[in-house]
Each structure stands twice: as C-alpha cells, then as structure tokens.
Length: 332
Ligand code: ADP
Ligand code: MG
Image (cartoon, rainbow, N blue to C red; front, side):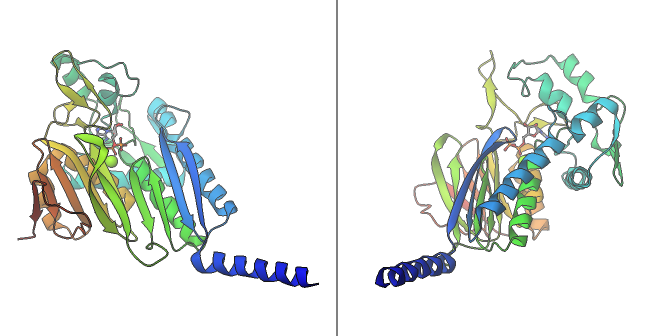
C-alpha cells in the first residue's frame, strides 16, 4: 500500500513538473534539401508528427524539381494550384515588386543555367545570359484565385521564399496546438514562438560568413524570425578564381556581387524575412538601409565583403561587439 502511494506521489510529481516547465520535445527532419530541427515546449509527439507531415505536404506543393504544383506550372505554363501555393506565389510577388525586381521568382532559368540546381557549375557567356534573361520577368506572372499563369517559356522557383513561408505555417500550426514556446531551425532560418520557458529571449547566433563554423554575434528575439542569406551557403569557384554564389541578380543574370557577404533579416513574418534576405543581398547595403528606413517591419545585420558589420539600431545584440568592425545604423 505504501509502495502504491509512493508511486502515485512520484507520478503526480512528474506530471506537475512536466506541466509547469512544459516538457521539451525535439524533432529532426530532413526536407526541402536541408536539415531542420523543431524544438517545442509543452507539446506532445502527435503535434510534432502533425508539424513534420505539414513540412512534407508543403514541400510536395512547392518543389521545383519534384512532382508538385510548381513543376506542373513550369511544364504547362498555367495550372490550378493549392491555396498555399497561390498564397505563397502572390505573397512573393509583392516582395518582387517592393524590391524593384531584386527578388524575382522567375530567375530560375539562370539559377539552373549556372548549375546551381544540379551542381554542374559553369560560367555562361554573355549571349547565353541575355537569351535566358528574356524569360525573367515576374510582372508577367498572374495569380487569379487558384490559377497561376506564367508568361511564354517562363519557369519559377520558390527557393528564395518557401522556407520562410513554411516556417510561418508551422508556427501557426503549433500555436493552434497550444504551444507558447518553441524554436524552429529550418536550414539556418530560425523562427521562434514566444520566448524561452524561463521568460528570457531566445539567443540566435549569426554566423561569420568568412568562417561559417564560427558565430559572429548573438541576437535576442522573441516571437520573431531570423533569416540569413549568404555567399558562403552555396557557391562555386570559377576557373577565373572568382567565387560565384547561388543568388542571381535578375538585372544582370549573374551571381549577385553587391559587396554583401551575408545579410540577416529579423522580423515577425517568415515570408517577409526570407524574401528580403535574398532580395537585399542582391541590392547591396545602401539600398537595404534605405528600405529599412522606410519600413517599421524588420531589422537587419549586414556583413560586407570587406568585413564591416552594419547593425540596425533595433537589433538586440547580446554578444560583445568589441574587437569587431561594427557600426550601428540609426533611422536618421
Ligand atoms: P537559402 O535558401 O540557401 O537559405 P535564399 O533564401 O537566399 O537562400 O534563396 C536562394 C535561392 O533562391 C537560390 O538557390 C535560387 O533557387 C533562388 N534565387 C536565386 N536568386 C534569386 C533571386 N534574385 N530572386 C528569387 N529567387 C532567387
Ligand atoms: Mg531567402
């Protein structure tokens, strides 16, 4: 009898502690060509299963290389798509517009021509580049309800924006499941729900683009997304000794070369952060800063190719900046 009482007491204690601290569950997923980790407090395995299934479902809508809404659209030029694909494409088009075409989801023919889809890298000649550039023009993409139509011969790719959008959908799913504290890492895109269970901010590391195994600085965030685009993520070195990265400048058809080594966007919306990280990597620091001054929605950390760090004044930097060539950018 005593034993039973003790067992019950122990069981009650376990339940109490797991409720009050919100037991942490972690799930590793490989999807969308990248490693993802979901660290969620106060959820059960069934909710993590649902989140993992949702990643797979969305990937099978957005992939440009597998059977999906997007590959059907690219083959047929016009297609009926799922609500999520229509939402993502029309949301991305708004950022194409906002960034004056620095983001252009129709730049895919050049991404693949340079070899970034297969790893068979090449430096095309300028004639070949101009030929393919004729197919790049996001203004020719139409979204009418669930039907998307591309211009003649065009192909699109959501690689620049899909992970941010998927992160938003996952946060929504987890919040609906009652989660108030979580950190999701989708291949370097970090999305957070609430703050840490102890109430303090999440600490998110920004990598040193010149030594990607090391952290450059740590930022504090809650209920926010931290998304980086960098030239160290995917690139090749040409016979000419130059480094060519996987983000293409749609105005030249060549890998972006704006003087940015990495740019991190911090904000509430994953689609916005993912869109802007890619677009402003193309635009360069000066235009990135002027867009930031016109907007209240995001903060950023830029590391230039000459190793200067530009930090907008709303970023909560938790690490020591001394010894770094860092400048805080203000609104004036
Ligand atoms: P990652 O997905 O590697 O974290 P990004 O979000 O910056 O990095 O997206 C880069 C991907 O977006 C490329 O691999 C390519 O598929 C696509 N892309 C490259 N340049 C552009 C561009 N200017 N506009 C839209 N998409 C682009
Ligand atoms: Mg992006």
